Image (cartoon, rainbow, N blue to C red):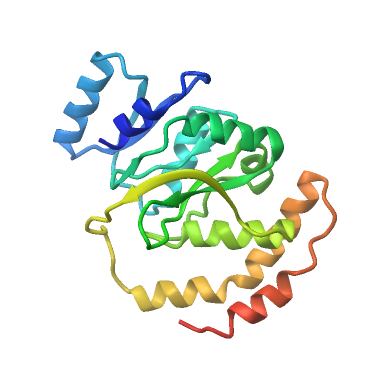
Length: 217
């Protein structure tokens, strides 16, 4: 359903490839993906053991299927905006180094990023490879602010998010504490990204971190 929502809502103005990571012990999903490929949906699949970190999945797919921009999507999401790819393409034209965010169709916030190749190359990847679950989208959002001195950029594309069970959700207190404790690392990395993109050294990172740290986990 997630794949078909993107496929059916695409504008047909751009080449879109659907690249999926599948655990090697997930036989129903492997069968479904095989059937989708046979029905000529442009699906490319990486099958292997469940990785230790969630962020490594997007990094691995991007390394195997390079693109101008990578729309990250999860299997508990559905896209409900026709022409989402055209909206994203226009955003990339306007901000070639950009990181963009879909909006949630419901009241809660859903963090669904799209990352340009220019940003991925400057940052060394789409996500970190630190976390077994969650946190990478939040990390990316803060990293954007610390690298650009700009607010996150939301697109007029809507997703419906119905989260399901989270794998490996354990030691939540530890991972939350680790995430908060790494803000100085995000400041440092943000300055590296700005340099790689040819931008001026960002200046708001320290104050941003101070204000965010006023709300401990």
